Structures are given as C-alpha cells and as structure tokens.
Amino acid sequence: MALFPSYLLASVVSFSTALVVSLRSFGPEWALRECRPSELNLRPSTTTAQLDPACSFLNAFFTHVESQRLSLLIHLNMVLCTFLLLGKAIVRLVFRELLPSESQHVYDRMLNFLLFKMIFVGAVMDPAWIRLSIWIAILGFLRIFSLLSRDRFDHLTTLPHFPLYQYKKISLLLCSLFTCDLLWYLGSFHLFPSSITFLTLEFLPVALDTLQVMTKYGAQLIDQWREQGFENKRMVNYYAELGTDMLVLAITLLQYLQLMWMHGISFSLIDIVLILNVRSVMRSLYKKAIVHRDRWRAMTYVKTKYVDASPGELLKHNDDCAICREKMKSAKKLSCGHLFHLHCLHSWIQHHVSQPTCPTCRRPLSDDVKYPS
Image: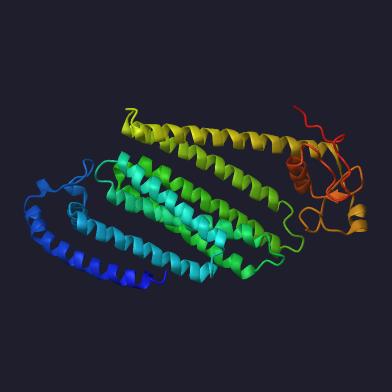
C-alpha cells in the first residue's frame, strides 16, 4: 500500500495524456461522422434519432477508445484506481479500520468478481462488452460494500456493548448503496436497452443483499431503541437471510442458463465451466431447502413438545437465556425446569441433534426429542 500514492500519480498522468491524445485524434473523425451519420457505429437497437448529441458523442468516443488497445488499458486502469480510492474513503469514514477477516473477504470477493464477471462473462458477451463490464463493475463495487456491512454486523453482534453510532453510520451507507444501485439500474434502460434482461439479473442480487443487511441492521436498531427489546429479532434475521440466499441462488442459476443460451452449446471449456456452475448452484439450493426443512421441523416440534414459561416463573428466575445471554421476555420450559428462548432452544437442538442435552445441566433430552420423519 505504500506504493499506491506513486502508482496513483502515474495513473493520473498517463490517463490525462491518453485522454488528450484520444480527444485530439477523435475530433476530426467525429466531424466526418457528423457529416455522414449513417456511418456512426451504433448498436443495432439504437438509431441516431434516438440519441441526443451528447449521448451520440460519448457512444462514438467510447467506440474510438475501445479500438486503441493501449489507450483502453490506461482508461480501465484509471477506473480501477477510482474504485480503490472511493473504497478506501468509504472504509475510512464508515468502518475506520477493517478486521483481518473482513479484509480477506473483500479480497476474495474482488478476485471472484474479476475472474468471473470481467473475464469469463467477457468471453461470452459480444466484442462490445467493455462498456457493459464497467457498468457491471460498479454494481460489483456496491455489492462488495453491502457484504462488508454484513460482515461488520456479524462482528458487532458478538460485542457485549453495541456501539449505536456504528449501526447508524452503516445503516446510512446501506441506504446510499441501495439508492445508487436503483438509479444505476434505471440508467441501464437508456444506456443498454438491448441487454436489459442480463443487467436485471446482475442488479437483483445486489439489491437483495443490500435489503437483507438493511433488515438486520433495522432489527438491531429496533432492539436497541425499545425498552422491552425485539423478541423476534433472530427470527427476522434468519428468514431475511434464508429468503435472500434462496433468491440470489435462483437468480444466479437463471444467469448461468442465460449465458449458456447466449453462448450456445458447443462443449467448449466455457460450456463445461457453465455446466459445472449450474450443478453447483442447484446443489446449494437443494442443501438450503433441506436445512430449512429440518429447522422448521425442529421449531414446530419444540413449540408443541415444551410448555411456555409462565410470567411467575420468568419473574422468579429473572435470568438471562444461557444460550444467547439476553433477557427473556418469553421462554420455553424444559422437563428439567430450565428456561430458554424458543428460537435459541430449537437452534441448540438442531446443532446437537445426535445427542441433545439441556444447555445448562446437560441432562439428556434424547427421550424428549425425537423428530418426526
């Protein structure tokens, strides 16, 4: 990172030079095209009459830059530097400093994004994919910070005291990310009308991930503000995460199928990779459905097997739940007399289904807990 300022300065100088050279070489060419608009290299779905002069100029200029390899690389490098600078500014303002695990997750997500979206999708799309890739890269940038906010939420919930100002800052960031995501998608109707189906499948996972994290932060803020807390916070978080994961996997599956349709089946390396990814996504969908089915069975069985603790019993014990260490406004009573939150109890039994015991006294519950088939 110590070399980043020098690298940024070199990138700015090279970008300024490339931009001036490109504009000077493009000026006469644009003048000729203005005289002969029929030769303007537009998309098949777009006519000259549909574009205003500024949009026509930008469209032709991007086409001109794409035809010059060195200039294109310099421009793309400047875009990457801009993303890095903006990302560092957001981290400094909102997160202050990233944890080692968060930094590793950001690196892994950026690498996966570059390998799949920027290289693999580029091999499937038509030759004019560069502008589309920059558009997708911005969505990827928004998604990385949305998932980073989720990682920070998982860390904050492990702390004994929740810094409320941190929740407010990240909630504001999430609202800004969602707004930018929505505006960027609306702009695609004007910029890339012929690729709107593909871009919709790119937009939805970003929006869903952001809404999921916003839901978690919202539930946490409600729990902080209300005197009696938010009893169903864990349940809301669970179903928000489950619904988002299932929808994102389904959208990813549709995206792979669309890429297969666009590329055609020729049993090349790209087709093999797509088929393997489709298989992996379908297996993930199946596993999540099975896990949810088991959790639902556990929840249903715990509700019917164990009685609710009475207000007198709650007042008598006046204790925290031994699983989550939070105050109990309502609880389930085991046969040994210990009290636990319903959602905590069914999660405990789910993770200890082979030999379930009471979390406090370790009394075996094998005689009590026999899940129906």
